[in-house]
Amino acid sequence: MDIGLIGLGKMGANMRQRLRNAGHTVHGYARSPELRDVASLDEMVAALSAPRVVWVMIPAGDPTRRTVQQLADLLEPGDVVVEGGNSRYTDDQANAELLAAKGIGYVDAGVSGGVWGLKNGYAIMVGGDAEHVAKVQPIFDALKPPGESGFVHAGPVGAGHFAKMVHNGIEYGMMQAYAEGYELLEAAGVVEDVPGVLRSWTHGTVVRSWLLDLLVLALEEDPSLQSIKGYVNDSGEGRWTVEEAINHSVPMPVISAALFARFASRQADSPAMKAVAALRNQFGGHAVTRASEAAAAAGAGGAGGTTDT
Image (cartoon, rainbow, N blue to C red; front, side, top):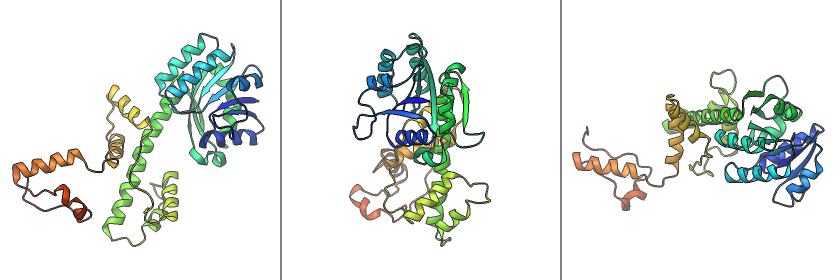
């Protein structure tokens, strides 16, 4: 079948190639002329046979909302829009309502696989009406990994991105656990071959996973990770997962701690820890490291002092 694909970044471009490898015709649109197959959304829609399927694969938020609004004016009843980025599930519900008023279907697709998806396939979690999902099923089948797993119709509109949100929250916790274990192995000085230990865990252990495989790969490329600064962004799904946990009174200590660790990674100097140091000094006379001494104190370990309460 033929499909329009909006957004040809790292994942979008690879998805286009995987679909073409499976025999589908893809009309890709991107702002960069060197990446796109068509020069405009109008040209893309004109190139598609009805009922049309258009997949949106651009950053969540305003860019996606604006694109869906444009498609609402360009598409016809019976066509389907697939939102394959990482929109919040509440945005999906608003997008679906906008399109439904014009007889256009909407499917939200949470997509996991990253830059490896071209080779390995993408795990896809979708939400929407069964009839709309069915129109896109050949595309989902081409994108997912071989075998029975890797695809789920999770429920109504919003369910796909809600499932992907929780998936990404779990990812935060798993990455943080591996990272903390790696740091302890390096810091203790007991283990001489830290990368080798992690590599040994990739087969036969209860902690083996693809994320662990990727950490091993990263250490093979840079054994001490010296080329990487410990500064970690978050793209939104971790925050949304914690917010939903609060909304539903679900305890979520691991994912919350992993999210907060990312916040801490972006602070050159922690205001909270300044306050703690100041309080210890005030109530117990504990020594503090002055800002002028910070550079010399870095890496020297914590200062001693009297016992606090």
